[in-house]
Image 1: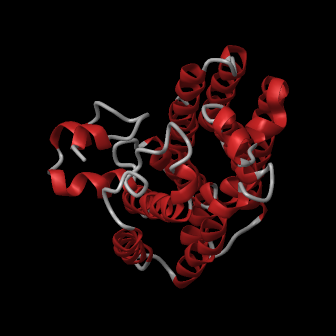
Image 2: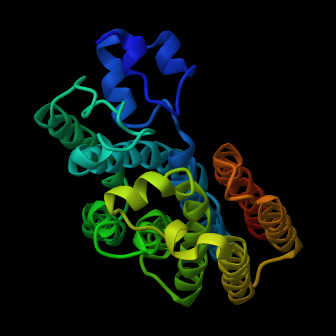
Image 3: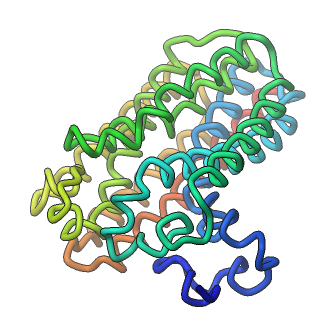
Length: 310
C-alpha cells in the first residue's frame, strides 16, 4: 500500500504526510502526532493545576519545570493511549469510514509492532513521571487503569465520554500532587470541572461517527443525546465553568484567574451557539477549538500565580 493511500482519512496534509521519514509515519500516526489536538486537550488540565497549585503555594520556582515536563508527558502518554486504543479497536476501526485507514487496519503495522511501540512510549512517560515526588509518581500510575479500560467502554455504555473525562482530566490532580504532595478539595473540584468539559467536547467529536457507530453497535453520548446535543453541551459546559469556578474560589485566586475563567466560559458559550450536529466538519472545528478555550483559562491562572508569588 502506498503512503498516500495509507493516510488517515481525517488527518491529511499535515507534517507527518509531508516531512516525516516513510518508516516512521505509521508510528507517528498511531501516536496521533499528525493530529496533536488530543495531546493539547490532555495537557490543559495539567497546566491548569500546575498554575493554580503554584499560586496557592505563593511559589512558582517549580512551575517552569512542571510546564515543560507536563508538555512532554501529555504528548507521549496521549500517544500511548491512542496506540492502545488502536490495538483494541482494530476490528471496529476497519468498519468505520473515518478510521479504516488507521495504521493497524490499513496493514501498515501489526498489532505486535504497535504494542512494542506502546511499551516504548510508556517508558518515556515513566521517565518523565520519575522527575517528580513519590506521591506524584503514584498518582500518575493510578491513572493507567482508567486509560486501559476506556477503549472497551463504547461497547457497554452510552457514556464512554465520562470515562475519557476521568482519564483526560487526571492532570488536574497532578499539579497539586507535585506542589503539595497531596490532593485537596480544590484539586477535586478542578478535576470534576474538567471531566464535564471533556464529556462535552468529546460529544462534539463523536458526532463525526454517529452513522457508522449506530450500524456497528458502538455507543456514545453523541448517539445518546442526538437532537438534544446542544442542550447537553450547555449543561456540561455550564457545570464545567461552575465547578472550576468553585475551585478558584476555594483557592483564593485574584482577578487574572477570574478573567481567564470568564474568557473560557465565553468561548464555550460560542461553541454551543455554533453547534450543528448535522455538520461533521463544524463539529470537528468546534472540538479542536477547545485547545484555545483551555489556553485562555491557563493564561489567567498563570498570571495569577506570578502575581501571588511576587
